[in-house]
Picture 1: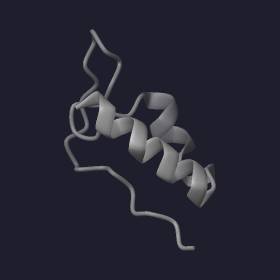
Picture 2 (picture 1 turned 60 degrees about the horizontal axis):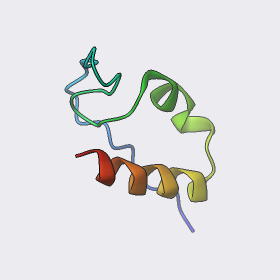
Picture 3 (picture 1 turned 90 degrees about the horizontal axis):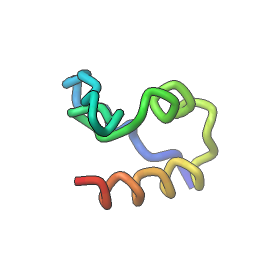
Picture 4 (picture 1 turned 180 degrees about the vertical axis):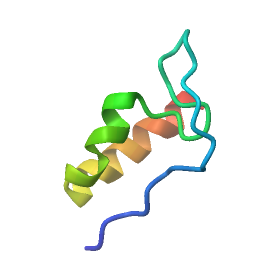
Length: 53
């Protein structure tokens, strides 16, 4: 199964209160790790991001 596309929206600002990117809702660690995650791990992260909205 192919890897999902990055959730990056191009709005790259970290919210100081949450530590999440205002565009994609990922943390800096999640952004840095994205390319190293397996497709399964990426999908799991995408599911967690939906809960952050």
